[in-house]
Image (cartoon, rainbow, N blue to C red; front, side):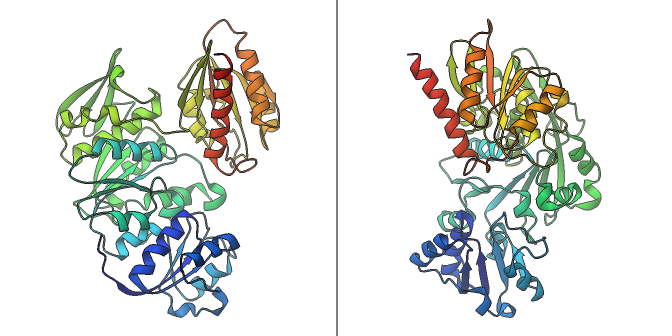
Length: 463
């Protein structure tokens, strides 16, 4: 895409995937761009790409218009970085890479997706359902391609489906989505945001710049989203569409479940569309129906017919590491849910099955397993590991769940398989950690891949 150059000065702070992508894009579009990362290897990599690495001490921040930070950098925390301190002192705008879309006046249709859980799956569902020969559908932002890459690779008619994390949304000023989606809100990242209210406010930034001709989709199945929807018209300008997988909505769109499938009931268009469970290619669990419904509503707003949407069903599949069925060995069915990095996400997993052997653990989020007690009825045995494993094992034992703890994932996996094979019924062995991975792994993918290797080894050994 041809983008007009602008006379603005940018400082890229953080040269991970998104930061490096933004820097390479800005290198072509701005006369003044500086880069920095505290990691020496990343600085060397950037220099090899002929990016301007500047020691921030030598820069005059009065001449910088924007500091583009990596999402995880906490610009709210006092003393978090001398770069952030200098930027604030000189009233420089601190932004995420998402804001570049607005700064460079990129006109592509933009669908924004946020929520505590299900963002990536919904983004993927929407991308898959909209795929056509006429234009490209880019999954980007916090999932898929980084924004700099997308701007460089896209054409004017292509669609951006943008997963927006709370970290990114906390650093946007004027980015306007044509369609914004809020799936759910539960307590997460409180150590970063400082309070639950601040976390909620960051999520609501997805609506703040929308106009009257834009649309907002909110799933009202949890109390926090329901409150936002109730007060929406007073605070925001866009047209609100409420959705639900649990209840009828007179002026919205909801699901009506039957034995063989379910209806999408669209009270806006007065349509009722049936979907047989056998035609769906993703795991038939509660939260995936929420993701699927959101994808349908985007198609509806973009004037795709029910027939067109149904034609995309074979493309709508689940994500790797998100309740991913890996196969079975005798009576054991293995599910990889390594992407479940908080208790709410794991709650969705264990609420979706019966006869569960649950493997969990890692570095706990604020609150640990608080609130999980009402969702344990289908958990027959828990196997915890890692930094929080012992604490989790003791907590679950107090809740009446048989529980055991070992330090490493491999150890608990082997014990779980040994015990499950003694059962005279189907066991769903679910790896849903309810924790971040950073105590023993690089990220949730690294952790999930180890679990998959353990499962594959078990299955292959039986052949």
